[in-house]
Length: 407
Image 1 (cartoon, rainbow, N blue to C red):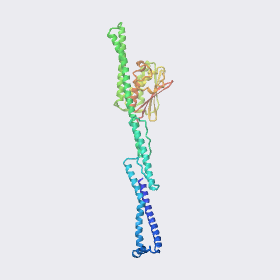
Image 2: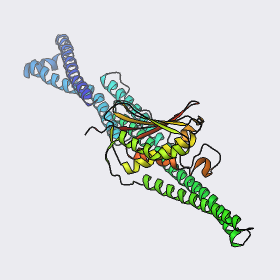
Image 3: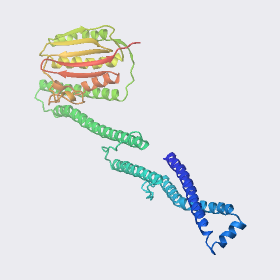
Image 4: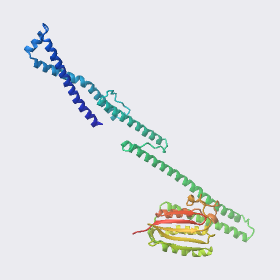
C-alpha cells in the first residue's frame, strides 16, 4: 500500500507540473494575442506601448509566465495536498488502532482509488478483528466449541488459528480434569463397594461367633471358614488395588531383553497343574523368528498370568486354550484364545475398565476383583505395548503387541 501511494503521488506531481506548464503556456498565448490586438487601438494602447518601449515584452512575458505558473501549481495542488493530508490523518488513526476509521475522499482519480483501497482494507481488518474478539468472548464464557474462521496467508489468520488450537487444548484439558475427577469418584465408589461387601460378611459371621449364636463346633468352623475366605478376597482386592495404583503412578521398570518364546513357554509350564486340575489343555504355537522385546519381565509375567487365568476361567467349556507367539512386521504378537462363552459386544469397549465385570454379580466366583484386566492393560501400556480383545460365538482372543528389539 505504501509503495502504491508513493507511485501515485509521483505521477500526480508530474501531471500537476505538466498541467501547470500547459495552463501557463495557454495563458501567455492568449495574452500575446490580446496584446497584439490592443496595441492597434487608440488611446488605450498607450500603457501597453509604454511597457513595451521601457521594459520590453520578453521580460514582461517571462515575469507574467512565472507568476501564472506558480499560481496554477498552487491552485491545482491545493486539493491534492488536502487529499494527502486526509490520507495521512487516516493512516495515523489506523496505526493507533482505530480500524473503523474511514478516509473521506470522493475523488475518482488515483488518490481516490488509494483511499478506497485503504478503506476496504480497514473494513476487512476491522470485520476480522470483530470475529476474533467475538470468538475470544465466547471462549471466556466457556464455549470452547466455537471456531474462529481462519484466513490463510495472513498474520491475523495465524492468530485465529492459534486461538482455535488454544481453545481446543483448553477444552481437552478441562475434559481431562473432569474425567480425572469422575475417575477418582468412580474409584472411590468401586473400592468402597468392594471393600464393604466382604467386610460386612466378615463382621456378620464374627458377630455370630462373638455372641455364641452357633449350634456346635461344626457350625463354628463353618462360620470361621466363610470369614477366612472373605478375608482372603478382601486381601486380594487390596493387593490388586495397591498394584494398580503403583503401576499408574509411575512404577520404576527394569527393562531387559526378553525372548518371548521362552518367556511364554515357561509361563505355560507353570500353569500345567492348573490346566490339569480343570481338565483343560494349553496349546502353544510359535510363528516367526527373532521374537525378542525390551520389557520388565517381572511385571510382564503378572499381565500374562492374568490373561492365562482369564482364559482358563471363561474357557472351561472349550477345554483348550491356544497361545500363539508370532511376528507382524516389526511387532511381536502374543494371543490367548479360549472357546467358552463370548463376551457380549456391548461389554467389549469397557472390558479393561477397573471394577468392570461382564456379569452383573461382583462375587469372587464369577468376576474376581474386577481389577485383573485393568492391571494387565496398565502393565502392557506402561512398557510401550498394546492390548486388544475380540470375541465371537466361536472364540475369545486377547492379543498383545510389542515392538521387536533391534539392538
